[in-house]
Image 1 (tube, rainbow, N blue to C red):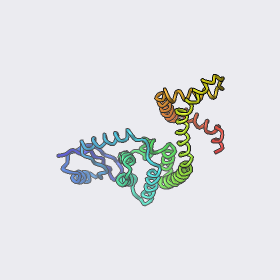
Image 2 (cartoon, rainbow, N blue to C red):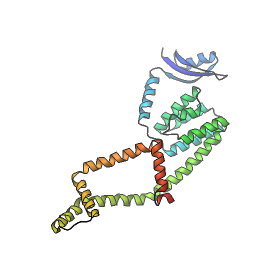
Image 3 (tube, helix red, strand yellow):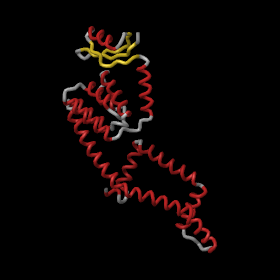
Length: 267
């Protein structure tokens, strides 16, 4: 007979978990019910570990859940709690209905944690890429005050406002973004095709060149002969900035720069 890993809860809230051999999940549920427990989660041993390993493998490459998916999840969870559905049951249902694979894995893990008796805020705090510190803190307050439904509704409304703002900003930045890319391409072509010809003319004339012109000629030489080093430098700079922004010191430095930078600080 197969071996099942299960979690069950008694009427008075006591949690019981372990492994047991049974013909199938139905027989296991009947056995636990006879002992006064209700089966809350069960997986076949072996399948359980394979699924867990697959989930962690996918979460290893997890880079974030779209704002829309988080907003829908939060709003639906608030509706289910308001309708009187138990939190663990609501999470299980949402995990089954969610189409985003990354969010599905996360919600499934959160549901398991809640079924084991852990606080909801503690479970979501394990996934900072999906739930921010503010989100976790507000959920913790909602659990303590007993108004989790209201807190979730407020979070969903705030995320909707954030989504509207992001959509407007993206729409407004399309045209400037296209122009910026074209300018970069034209500048590179000038450095590679035009500046070298002008440099030859300046050498023939023998005139003393200003520092700005010498700098442009140097950049042109780098773009032609050391383009791989320049590309590696740009990529390294991008990844370095991203890594710095993930630290507390980097975040503070970036915020200080934004608040003091000309033009940007006005926004």
